[in-house]
Amino acid sequence: MGDKSTLHRVRNSTLVLRVMARRQRLRRRDHWSRGALLAHQARALSELRAFAYDRSSFYRRFHRGMGDAPLSELPVLTKALVMEHFDEVCTRPEVRIADVERYLRSASVDELLGGRYYVAATAGTTGRRGVFVWSPAEWVDVVASYNRAFDWAGSTAGLARRLRTAVVSSTNPSHQSARVGASVHSPWLPTLRLDAGDPLPSLVERLNSWQPELLIGYASMLRSLAVEQLAGRLSLAPRFVFSASEVLTASTRSLVERAWGHAPHDVYGATETAGLAAECGEHQGMHVFDDLVVLEVVDHENRPVPAGQYGTKVLVSVLFSRTMPLIRTR
Image (tube, rainbow, N blue to C red; front, top):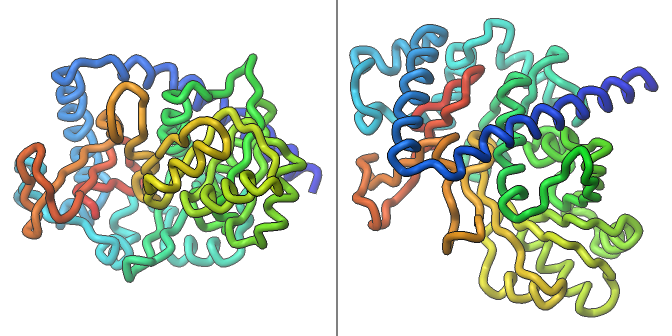
């Protein structure tokens, strides 16, 4: 047990250091011109497609005869297709769905698939559960994408800055929020992970004891905690509050601001894509991570709609995905 704990601490510390280095590079992109950003997207998308065609038999078949076609003409990748053809979508021959499913049934949040791969599954609320796998290098990008939102809010931990954190979301080992929370627990980011399904009095007691400087939670959970704070049962003074995974309504935003003196920062992400967008402080609304993903707002026939118009859905291509290339997925 001691050896495992030591391994986890070393792995997490190494990961956090790699994420810090990655954020330094990503931070430079925050000031790119729109032209530079679009040029980067084009290069990264071309590299992603070339990799997928070289390593994935599924993509060679799925995009047959369309290797030079623009992104908007490619077929849409659904969760059902990913799961039906999982072994062919994956570019690593050692990653097989039977092994992944067996791993998910018994693994703890600190264990990696085969000692190497990070795995997370969607909740299946859209009708079909999806399972996704990342290499250590890709996981750095996953964590860095969420860290970007913290960075924009001025709350990034560092070698000389320790930031006590509490995450109130899911502790289910198969959920990405639990995996990320477990991954960043380190001397620089000591993290208390609480399950949103636990009784509220228990959550209040543990948060009062922990006294986080950074509080992260589902929007509905932040609302409940804000009510507890205003009633005097919860006594926290977080410097930063982040809302994730659910729609942050105007009433919840206002309640959180009343409870802790400043508005929460809204973050948008998904299991397949990791962080997609966040409030950045410089613009109204959400700032999309266009250097990490390509978002297409499309109509009911998957055709891109003009800028400024509402579509019926969003398709995403994840520019850093390699173990499981994700191109035009929804």
